[in-house]
Image (cartoon, rainbow, N blue to C red; front, side):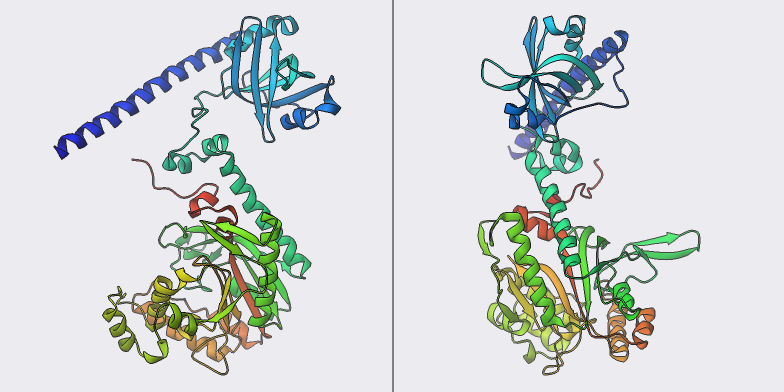
Length: 506
């Protein structure tokens, strides 16, 4: 019975798809015919430009000033209704919609061509602003011009585009039918504008570093590999936003730098990760981790207030409070409190592996002690940190670019801001001892040879730069997509990426 039921469901879905395709083919053929009629009437269906004097939303917003005046608006036809010698059409541009009121008496022969205008087409209308008997602010059209023919029908007006797969594959339709999707992308732009303005006002200089690198260092991640034909050599897409480059700039005399751009990691895809993502990284000479905590707290609290209007923020059912100061907790405290694991009791890889196996935790055989600690932290402790909290003093094994803590050399001067179990930023007092840096790169090399593809690659050029002397530096990196998810209450990262990567359709 189960097989019969599944067969019936598959047959129904196939028939439904075929029915939808047949209906779409009918619409497309009708539009082709309408296009032909327009051309035969001497209409250019794809002119080079449109002209306008006002945005659609202004007709309603500025009605008192515009009533009785001549305006020209442009946009897409979203609805069209009427018969005989009167027709109404809603026109939509970036600002919203307005209603066009078409009468045969005003347009004469030009009126008959309206029957060849389909929903989704772009037109330009010119006329007098007035209010209909129903009380709607509108444009009484005295002239109109065709701007572009849509050959495919738009998604059904009232239901919009609900299929998640289609929404991500055809984002242009998603933006057209779902205002929320557009607002998410706009909020992301506002966040980037805020970061650029905030850091500039704090005295940081914006810089631009390479996307293509010979050595993808600066983070623990698996890179994308490519080939430069001109020099016949392999290269990699950067995995962070110029961390080592920015520190080399500080060696060269810059003191406060930042960069906003794309990074690429050839790793898993899930609700909080994407192979291509946006980051902001900034570096500050003569500052330390504690100074970074202060400026990061200031940045995040102001940003939340700028976007949401207050320090309070709702995210996935949680009520968050970004009013400073944020709580600060050490990595060891978090592990003991939430994961019930005292990492100091397991100083070797073998001891830690044995304990985690006792706890039925899936142990990666290629991982070193640091990665195992990090994996267990991410599984058992991090999800329990809900309110904005600074996590500090991470194990040295998972922080190869950070300066050691003097009181506990097994840990480093690192910070992460955690919100709702997700890392919002990652920073530290940067390591500036060339010998110490060389030693840590050597340890990472061993992990790489063992098969840990996410181990950090060593960079001899960076070590050489350190040998010329680098002042104390504090650095920080902020993930823009995760920040946008937080500020738009989006559950998955694809929602905040304009055109997310998708597998090809079969």
